[in-house]
Length: 237
Length: 322
Ligand SMILES: Nc1ncnc2c1ncn2[C@@H]1O[C@H](COP(=O)(O)OP(=O)(O)OP(=O)(O)O)[C@@H](O)[C@H]1O
Ligand SMILES: [Mg+2]
Image (cartoon, protein in one colour):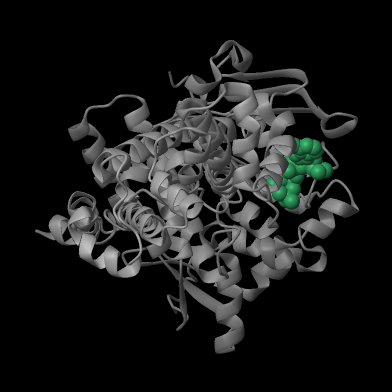
């Protein structure tokens, strides 16, 4: 019962998101009122459910890669063997964040061509930054006395990492993952401009054709998705 | 693996450690007999912690040889070595995300003891250190007072019943009263378990109270070693003399001498002084009682309350001094 209570908010948001995706087209009269001069007021090319699933898949793949790479890199540079890369990596992580996401996308197209792969790569690069930064901060904040006693009583380096450092740093790491995923849910929409199918499709199409209704439909679904994911993170972190 | 009493459990043979050009420990030699408590004392930065941490290879020595139980420590796998040596430090280093019971049980867990045995061990150690199992087993380190946390730290160091215990200023962060009670507790525990202990402190009073053997260090070298009363009686130079309290030495020495060693037999007329002191109390306490009550002699009693002798003020003047 307590478990259900705890996870109720994200589950409710998820339900709202799915119902909206499924039934958004039924709100045609509302959109017709918004754009009275248009024949088509509901984005016609793909179903919202299909776009939502593709959008989610791109974000999920990018998040999985960013977590593996970001947490891995931060662990690597805080070990003795990788310590010379620590200044470089931590600087990249803080400078990189000031880079606009569109620029990252624009850079990945020449490398990978149009399509979902280029979007995933851009999202991974962009999503790495908060994860690396937070994981570094979390690991570096572990008390030196705790580390010394961990070694001193005979934990191996692996055991120290898995039993002590990562659990203590976990809240910081989760915070970084949360920021990363939330940003990338929004950023993935821009992927539509380079040929990936995402919830950005109706937004871009709405902007290009001057059709507010399309833009609103994409924006509402992206907003709901971001809220759902953020709410889920607030329960587990 | 415990050798006969008297054989050194830990031997340092001309051991040095340099960090780059800086020499932190400079050719020290030291034997710690099995079952004895050796205190390294000296001012900040003199190399005490470095010496201690070379024994469990948290720091690798750069010169000389360290042997445990006759074997060079370089021959052991460092992780295996450390699991056989208890280690307790000033700010406890308890794992903040684990309960007290789990913290204490960590080394048994590393050594793959079964759950029941670990649990039993944790509970008996908590009892040994005066920590109520019901009240504390499930608490987290941030819920403990400094003294309680330090007890847990010592329990953790003892968990796998190591022969050797290394302690780096374990009571350094505690208030004087808590520190004193933990010192008493350590002595009580040590009299039962007889570990080979190397204890670091910069507090000479703590050293005098705890040590079987005191090692005074300065700038990476040993400048004097001996029993507390040897160090008190014959400080090798001005530095050691200052450390042992200069003109306060008389009282320090009195606090190390039990009344039983100085008492005389009762006078023939059978008159017993009104104020009494325990045979096992210190001479310092005896002096304090004389000053307080304004008397020049005390009755000495044993722990059953039986009068076994007397202590006149004259004894202090005639035989106690140099
Ligand atoms: N990792 C290190 N790198 C370089 N120098 C070090 C290192 N560890 C210790 N030292 C130096 O070695 C010397 C001895 O240090 P150590 O920690 O053994 O002193 P200490 O006697 O324990 O002092 P304190 O009472 O302040 O703890 C100091 O001068 C210190 O600066
Ligand atoms: Mg020290």
